[in-house]
Length: 220
Image (cartoon, rainbow, N blue to C red; front, side):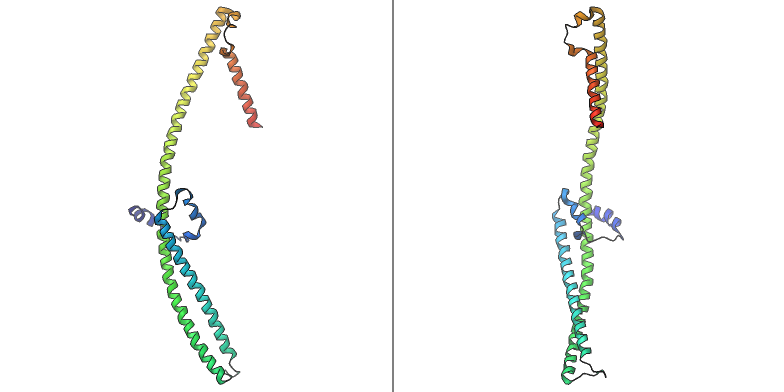
């Protein structure tokens, strides 16, 4: 909790954080790391709050539509003088006014609930962001350790590779010099007795041909 309080909160201060559970990119964060029980619990809490918000919003829309209908009925029951067309119309108008008042009370009550829900959703989303950042931070930390270990291994291999390239060149030069010496001393007839695979010139020629063939394949 200390790291979240000291590091993450200042970083998020004043930021407009989108609703994470509605963001597909947020869900993809956990395809490799997996989702922790804490995050799952907070995700469920946030989704439940969003469901309540959606239900209240739809309910308020329905109430407003009903209010508009009731108001239109009141107008339709008025004469040109603005009075009710009949006693029955007057009774219907009074009933509609009562229902409109109830609609206003429900709309106001829902508005208060929505304001409270907005605050709860913002807090839950903010806490979910902190938890998510902690998981990502830990995952990056673990990956960084592995990257550093692999990088160290690669550097070591490069050093060993350079050493072996030098050793190989030295041994090839040694073979070349020794073969030339034997050829000069004993002559070609004696040298033919040896297995030709030890002929450094043939080996170099074969190597060069292989390299040329590989280069040709790569350019095709």
